[in-house]
Length: 183
Figure 1 (cartoon, rainbow, N blue to C red):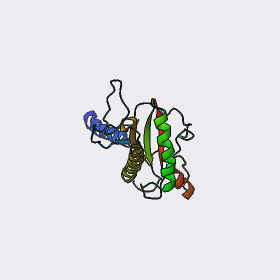
Figure 2: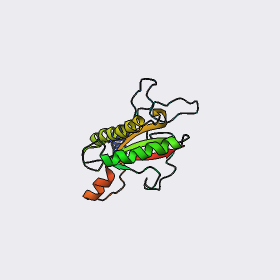
Figure 3: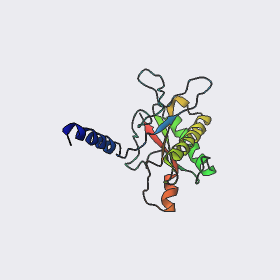
Figure 4: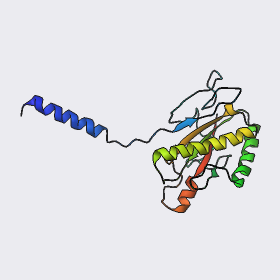
């Protein structure tokens, strides 16, 4: 076999191998427009304008300032969701009432509402469910008087679990909305 006949199969094999790497899907950021402003999916940029991003790995500008490495322990506790649900329980609403008061008392911060799911279901399904959870939590905070411009919503689906074990307790812990406090 000549050298030129070997080049093509080798190149095809390299291209095929390059496509086999496992990549984490991007987070999905979304927001709903209000009647007085355009949709913003993250806190204000340097010009005081909202930033509109369809897909983004960070979800919002800034980093979670007050939570530990596991994403817990900040001033805004996670709220949990029932299996395959995006509605807020009475307990979650009570927690979020306190969150709304805290956010309003700290006018310089922004909050990224992160929707998370347990490991069951497809990546796409869980990104959509995580988005519904984040939007539900964000909308509830807005209904309690928190300015929408200070809130971002992002879905991480099942890609960032708090508990990586495969138990029902882990599933309960992972079905949540997390509130990342940002500067």
